[in-house]
Length: 398
Image 1 (cartoon, rainbow, N blue to C red):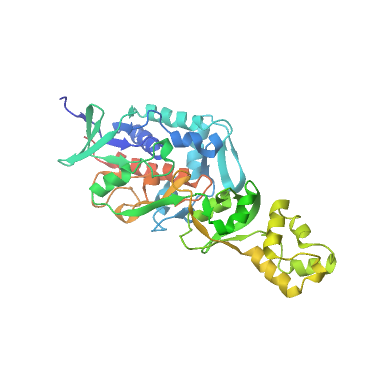
Image 2: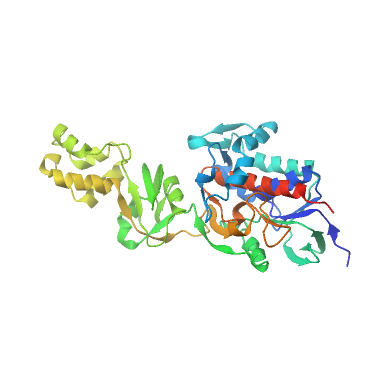
């Protein structure tokens, strides 16, 4: 059997974080091997943003991330900002545009981002091994990675294989399994940015499948104003996906269906339009099918003039905080990201290196840092990948 090939670092996972980390480390003079079990790198990038890749968010900061340690992401995010990544995108001549809420997308295709990352890897002399599973061992202070029929050895190993979301794209528990072997703690992974399912007793709302509205969705103290979408299984849309990351089983999701109206609006409408039915008023703010369904649920039929003020006040409160009781989520198959992962307590926030396992790094979605919807998770991939690459560059080479 041939001797292992020697590298300064081996990066496992050719997604956003892994490719970026490998490229930067290579460009800083490190001899890097980038491995992925998929024959095609960046598969999750390719489907993101409807195929146009929401590659960052100009407002990304630690407050936009969920983690057992809410301060952990500050260091990496502060040292590699959305503006830094945007300058790279522009240097490659990739046209982009801003959508709502600071979200940046390619004008063309997500393939441009993958091509950019591969070009950056090539510029750093990164060697790649795609379409081959990796087997990790550790002996004599070195990491040995079996890749197909060959073996590579390096003093540094970067786990960048992501979480469990979207298994059809090849997601596995690889990063968690390796971390556990080296006695690193794992925060229980769960689906995040995921549609919620409703029980049969809320089946009425399933008849609204396809109807969406601008709302405020709340889970606990977290509130998000965006569109909510009714589906044949329950609730989805950006506002719900955002809230889902904070939702816990047994907890309600509250929806304010009329976030733009002022308190007391129904009594005022009663004075100004006493003969109007409630459904007509709701239809000015909401899709007709939704307005009618809410009216039916409230049981307030007939003209406003015939409805007591007290009943209108109760209706207002209910419309501003309608409680849904999800019985679950649509799982990792439909989750955009994974919450939980390798515990931040195990890692240096500056370098992403494991405190108890020198030379082992974890970046991107594999770590217990989960961003909001809208380009935040990509920014974490770039920032954490950059942090690890800087640390690799500062290590003594072979």
